[in-house]
Amino acid sequence: MIKNLLIKNYAIIESLEINFPDGLTIITGETGAGKSILLGALGLILGQRADSKVLYEEGKKCVVEGVFDVSEYGLKAFLESNEIDYDDEMIVRREISPSGKSRAFVNDTPVNLNILKTLSAALIDLHHQFDTLDIHRQDFQMKMLDALAGNKKLLKDYQSEYRDFQKAKKQLEEIQLLAAQSARELEFVNFQLTELHEAELIEGEQEKLENELSQLTHAEEVKKNLLASMQQLFEDEQSVSTQLAEIGNLLTTSGKVNAGVQGIAGRFLAVTEELNDIGREIERLAENTEYDEARIVESQERLDIIYRLEQKHSVKTLEALLEIQNDLEKKSASFANQSQEEERLEKQILQHEKSLMVKAGKLQDKRRKIIEPFEKKVLGLLGQLAMPQAQFSINLNDTGHLGPSGLDEANFLFSANKGGALQKIREVASGGELARLSLVTKSLVASAIPLPTLIFDEIDTGISGDVAIKMGEILRQLSNEHQVVSITHSPQIASKADAHYFVYKKDTEERTIARVRLLDDDEKVRAIAVMLSQNPPSDAAMQNARDLLGAK
Image (cartoon, rainbow, N blue to C red; front, side, top):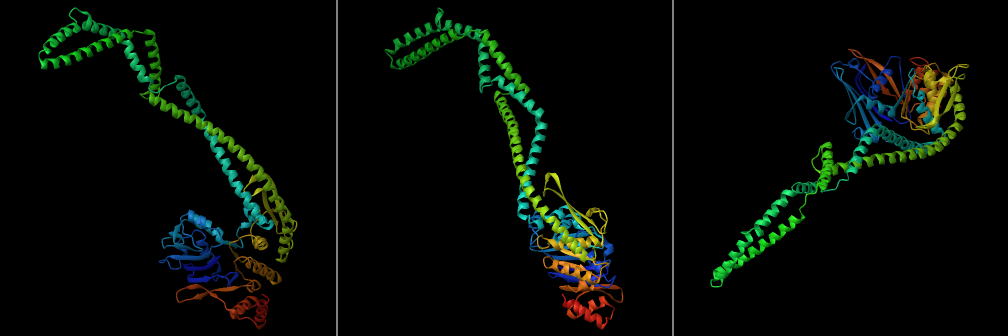
């Protein structure tokens, strides 16, 4: 609800401030005194566009500031998501500079007009006589039906599951789109993976094969060199072993008489034994070294496979190939998991759909039950507001598919005249009749639905007497549940006020300015008496005004 409105330097308003209490606030005044200017200023903090033409003094900025109690509006998440500090008391300010530049603030945080408009829809419900009303919106019509049907808990459960349902459908669409885009990639991945699997790569195999192939291709040369070494070591007439044996005998002989030579002889004997051992190893290697052409071909073919795969995948080692193979296996598995996830989501969606259809059916049944009594109440109240020939009907269509509110699509049909074709409210030209229809419908759901501050601008045009009294009573009843502000020319409606503001003009030496004054009890009587008769009012009008106020 709005608590306070401060306006500075706007149109013919130099500076004024209005405090709005709970209940019904009435604003009256002479024609042209500035009542519509108040709404124009209010429109600035509701996100309407403006320029420097609105400035009272061209060299100063215009400021419009509203203070709202938002404790019941559930706006905390919205504000925090837009990095705005939350407090139960919200301050919305709009500034228009002399250059025409506009700035908006919510709790001193700069915001754009889109945020301002979103907030304004929750804070203020403004009904001009010739405005399009929110009851033309199908979502609001459904909201009223659900409030009357007592669908709050059931609808909350439905909408919670519906969000999960929509989320699962979106995930499925994304997976299916990805699957379609990835079909060719999967085919290529599987082709590469098959090729690597068929190669049956083994870690360390390449180095082993390269060493083996090197040995095999040089086997004849190695064997020849080994045999030649054996011959020189042991088989020639002057072989190394023969010469070493002779040297060993000489050292052994001398070592018998010379201790120093004896040590050398021992060392030489160890060297000779090591050489004999080397000779035996050479002999073994020579015997085991054979040229194997078939094995050479086999090893070369195996390495050719490895080299070809390395070249194809732009790597230089078999280990890098194995890593690529592992990555391809993971990617292939992810496609398989994708298919499993798609199947899981399809099952989940089907389960949600079955559950939602049951809940939607219950919502539908409860809505249908309250339509006829609601229609009768609306027509009864419209009759009291001088619209006895009005027609009103609610068309609840089963769309056949699940939506945010179930299976239904609600359309409020209306005609102000007897015999007139019933049309959807959004297709009917708006006017005073629709303002009354809005007042009537909202008064019927006031106790069951959260509404913002309701502002009615001259919806009493064309009515008087007992009809105006009835409208005042409806506004009064509505204000018991929600804050209501009404700009009116009707004394009957004005008499129902909790707070009565009077807007008037005051002439200064330089110009005319608008002022507003909260009336006390005596001033209320006089203001209503003037509205009933003339200024100054007659004694009869004064008594009539007292009677109206007494009937409140």
